[in-house]
Length: 251
Image 1 (cartoon, one colour):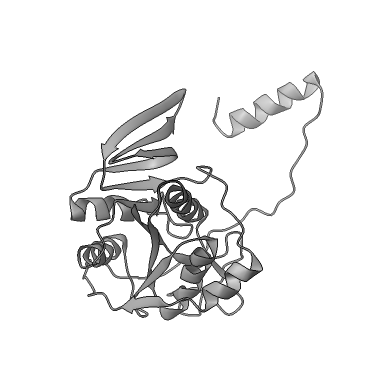
Image 2 (cartoon, rainbow, N blue to C red):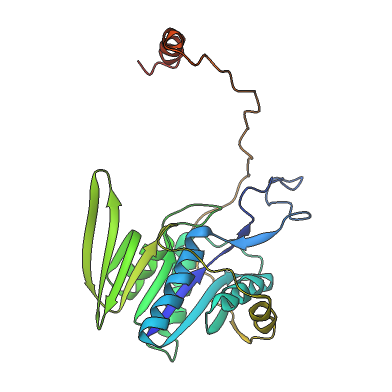
């Protein structure tokens, strides 16, 4: 079974983000980087499927050369091969990213059975790349998956909805975007990390695609650091709760 898992280099979740003086980029001076929790689950799912059915997991990312660090982290988790689509310092939106990934898949010597994506990245949260790749390749796609089983040439994917779940049976090859909680990503051993440092990561330069977008300015959302107010611990606090809800126009 041949599986491709796409990841994206993003600032560590929970890190305090500062902008450059021109507000056109993130100041990365003191930032660490990782890949998104959804994508960690996508990598883990690919590794588990190959452990069960045999085959190969290829991890792919689009970004600058520094993104090979995240590719090697995925290899340390158990992926077999890594590909960097070296996009340089250009701005890549979801449409251009999807086209570049689709072209890499079409130009590959490998016929992938399953393409796994995180449901959304931890930085822009566009929810678009996996769906757009499926559209470019003419493949079936299921998003927001919390359970996945593969049997021969068929995948059964389950998505949670209010009050229950939806189950999809799709023929492979297919695209699936997964959500955090699908599985418990493994922590790679120190030996695996050291071996991954020596792993070869294939590099290609994708053709940029003009999306007709221009970055004007970034803005860091304001945070509310005010202390929480405890209204009470007994039924007498109910009146105060109602007052707050009325003030917020909830009731």
